[in-house]
Amino acid sequence: MINFKYIAELVELAESSKKTIAEVVWGWESEESQCSSDVVWNKMHAGLKVMQDAVRQGLQEQEKSFSGLVGGDACRFTNADTFLGPVVAKAAAYALGVSEVNARMGKIVACPTAGSCGIVPGAILAVGEHLKCDDKVLVKALFTAAGIGAVISSNATVAGAVGGCQAECGSAAAMAAAAVTEMLGGTPKQSAHALALALKNLLGLVCDPVAGLVEVPCVKRNAFAAVHALLAAQMALAGIESVIPADEVIEAMYRIGLDLPRTLKETSEGGLAKTPTGERITEGING
Amino acid sequence: MGVFDIIGPVMIGPSSSHTAGAARLGKMAGTILGEVPVKAVITLYGSFAQTYKGHGTDKALVAGLMGFAADDERIKDALSLAEKSGLEVVFKSSQGDYHPNTAEFELSGVSGKKARVRGASLGGGSIRITSIDGYEVEFAGEYYTLITIHQDKPGVIANITQILAQQNVNIAFMRVSRKQKGAQALMILETDQPIALRAINAMNELSGIQSALVVQPI
Image (cartoon, rainbow over all chains, first blue to last red; front, side):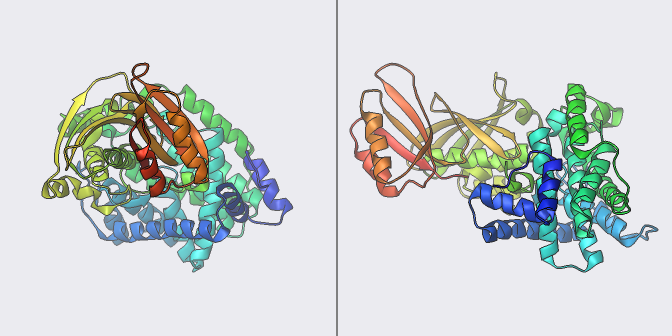
């Protein structure tokens, strides 16, 4: 029986069995769902293909969302000169693209939510190209990310309405950081540090979307969080450790989420939504 | 909690609660009607009522009614597709003491059949149906769900479960509700295995049964 409730247990399971986090999570899902490991793998692979399609679409199409607030920035970003390294620039572009596809009612994979759906694909697909790896490595990365997300979801929350944006984009960045660390040959412990570093540095992030839409600031934030995840992974791979262990960071995220006022948890009653511009946009759409 | 609750669902954006959940609610309501809908009056409550346009909640609800899944790329065009297919849709907003993402469907089918279904989108694409034809119910569409309307008298439920037992179908959850003692009752029964059509036909033959219908997991 594979069983883990905490990141520490997941790391211990991986280390004691000399497996990656991805392999432990893959086996766990197969046990839990009573589906063969092939079935579980193929389902995850199907998710990966949707993500890859969303990136392609996101970089090509410039159509605006229904509100007209977002759309076209992934194209703009990709076509511009950049002083950033290619992995960072791609991660940002892909995350923007996937989020724009989501905003214009295209097909995406919630990861862990629709509002944060660009972060994990942005980070792992950009790193995948850097490594010139095949889909296998990417599917494994998704299992790693999913395992981290499952722990966060069962001990805290991944819902913006409960914990603010730190619970959505923070969790997605943590998932991506751990996945990228493993893709680059990091140990399970290093993945745990990467996720702790990523989540720690998005603690307190509020969910204050303009007009209640998954657009402003969500779409661009996906790009920021994807890059944030890469930095966390790079730090962990360099041997930098999070002083506060991953499970305690997750617990802190949850407490902070509960402490946040409801005006900053997906109600659009505070923050950016209540700026003069935010209010003007809201009236234009819903008025 | 499984990995596909985290990396998933595969869906049409922008919101798992306001778009994917809405499509699933619509699909469930359409399935409960049990035939092609020709008219739908959809009342939105809470956050659904406030933000439905920007999230495409209206399109997703109607797409679901037409049987589209939450990852069907036609969701975006659902309103014009509905018009073309002869499904008349009316949206209303109202206030009620319900979950903030609640929709209520009053449906008429092609043969004149009617159904009234209320449900809520709980986040992450999961849903809960809370009322059918005025009966308070509670199910999520994650299992094979048998819905029966039957007479409230001894033995009717035993006869139904007998048929399931013969088919080797295990009951995971069950709930019975009625408006009045001895009158009509509604039962929701969620099972681990699929329920064969012949079992449903057998149930519809039973005395005291007005209708039996199975909803596949969505």
